[in-house]
Picture 1 (tube, helix red, strand yellow):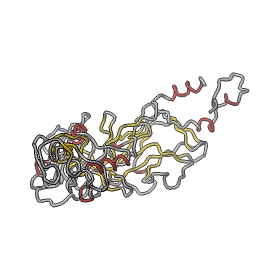
Picture 2: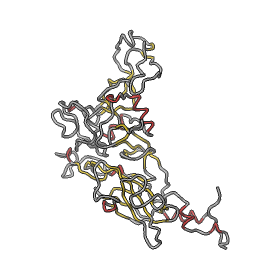
Picture 3: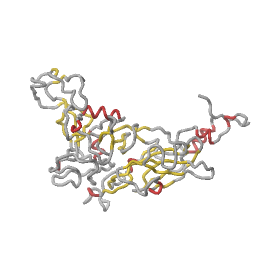
Picture 4: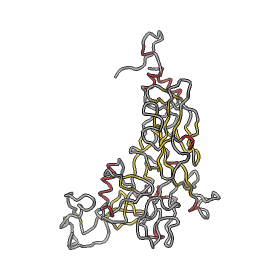
Length: 398
């Protein structure tokens, strides 16, 4: 570690000289707000003015208010539903040229550029968006809160609360997530297998359930590998708000019709989206929550707990699910006394499915084909918002 800059009025100390190479060693983006990119329309983003951004050790740029659209894509001419996009600032290395913004599906660098002349500064998810007011209250086509037909006031666009920056993002990878508020991000989609013993939030996938031998414990373990956790009931109610209730005789508003025989794939019901942009919070499969309770009824089970009394189960029920190994036993008053909440409803629960629907009957070791999960993650702030003027003044102080 050494002092990079000093204040030397004689200019004889090389450390007093400020140049591009020296500035580029300062890797933090200096911005007036951590949310320096935001969705300014269904198909456009705005980069705010006054950000100072270094690119690849040779370029320093100060941003102006800049609108980005599909015209900034490195490939194709339109955004696609269910895809995660990344926003890059690129440097042509021509002193007379300004920065160039590129939007790409590539997570490393955009087509036509490389890791040294481009820098990823944010991203977003393109998907289903519910029409809401500034307080996240659902609107119908005439902008009436919960007015007639509000359930179908859904369109394709940049999911506003999915937009992330280096200063406003979850601690985990941000793909397929939205900002719920209060320092919490949640997955847009019910979780599916990522192929690496973790989970992913992805459009058009069959959500993992007991069909893949998953129980509450297995979801907790896989989510931890992905840097996430299960949400609680309060968080569920918040991110499910604005999702229409299920119907007995149709899948118009949720995958819930009593005639359904399976889970289907995420995002297949257009109207099944909440105010913040979470998909399938109602119907399709129940969601495990991070809350455990003890059940009120006193039941016995000859195989596990034959008498209504405190004691160890005769054989442990805890080693069920995706991984089968010795994980200990449960000391309880009766069989199945421990339960984990699940929320939302399953594919055939009809009108019982809803944004506050909850089931208190499932023990955490239950391997059930109609229970899945989605992840939550805390917000991380890696930038300290400040104006570019404050930034330059700080540099002068050495």
